[in-house]
Length: 171
Picture 1 (cartoon, rainbow, N blue to C red):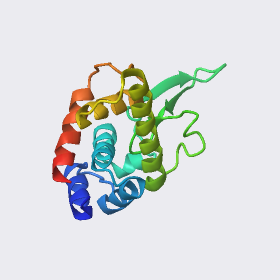
Picture 2 (tube, helix red, strand yellow):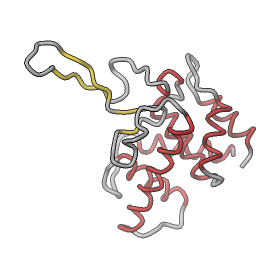
Picture 3 (tube, helix red, strand yellow):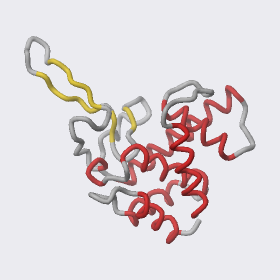
């Protein structure tokens, strides 16, 4: 995998307002994997989930971002906003990431997302069999990551696969 190409594609696809440091994200991804398909998938998820925003990676979400919900405090009329998704890859808290959930460290976020994507692929491959096509493996990984049925089709799936194709072609 070409480091300069990974940095360039992250810089090209990230938000223009407050982009994540492409060098730091590239390093975090390279520590996680040498596999071009998984590296491209991590970039695609970061871009589609948070637009590669450093602000979101830091946990500074606006009220409509990060899978926010409004909750009324018990015994009160006061409403608070709770953010259910965390970081650049917008993971929801679960048993596998509970100890690191909320970390601002891109290396921690990339590790958690990589683990989650691999777990999604592993789960779906057991259920449906491991496809030979890298693109079908990406679909299974994304469905598992999203917590959906392995054969699910959902809004945003095709867009994520398209970004994965773009990134993969440049690596």
